[in-house]
Image (tube, rainbow, N blue to C red; front, side):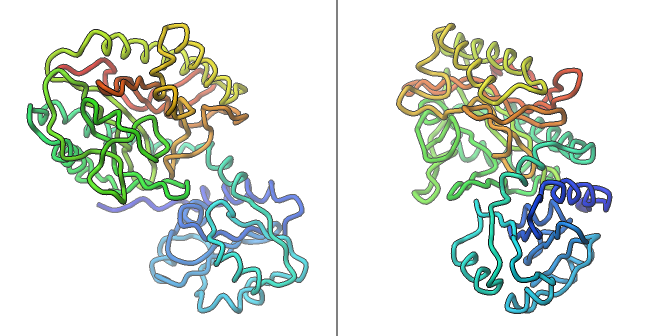
Length: 390
């Protein structure tokens, strides 16, 4: 299965957007692989330098031959950072933008020594805002990712049986998605946040809190990654949470559905219906000009009005603090539908995920990825949203 190369027109458009935001910057240096690939078409080890007023340059340590094949930009070997100032023509007194949200301190300190006389500013927020608005090319890839996650989650119906372990059921879903082109990993930008292909947990195990920036955590199978499916056997009459990221050629969509063998307690069925109502209300307001906080406050006010303030997004002492988030090349993209001033714009891809957490019973709720358009929103993830009775 061949991967999709990014056309030169895509790369050029992204670079122009960044250059338009540089103001007094001399240029931007990128080292993070996702940003590198977004602006150059290759994620091979090295860097991308985008000057404010001239052509971008890619410098690669490993693998140079692959980078030459993948990127439509000028690609040079990166033999040593010590010669970076001369090779890139960075003059004394330059102001350089860096991804200071992800660049390790040691790398920064070394770079500051090599580019002595230059000053540095954080460019990461501007990069994330540029990436939050998708092109038609990117949207086409995300629609393929949606087909992958739809198929993976739908397959649960044929494998869900009493006594199957969470991790076994998750492996069935992941295997199918991998065979369809899922890369097997999901990028997460936040420090110390590593996510599996999905969270598949049942009953109270789905409500086990964890460090991950998500409404759900899960027991997991390792102290070093205490989240996601564990070894617990799934029982009848309990909710089975299936929250997976579909990925196609690097682009992510996010989807959650609830399954059950038998009937759930009425309290959970009612909570699921309330989550659907909240998702519909938030989705209707995903239009240009609204802010992340507008959507979050709408969700919170509806949760309170419907009587779910102690469950929506988690119990009172462990709420996730958002009802949605942008998706794209990383799972935690802009805009955040939380207490932020992130503006909704056309051609954003946003996952909306009102979930009701019941510590002793489990989790119900829903998540879909929406595309914002001038005429409203398009739901990219297509599965039926009701509880799937098996």
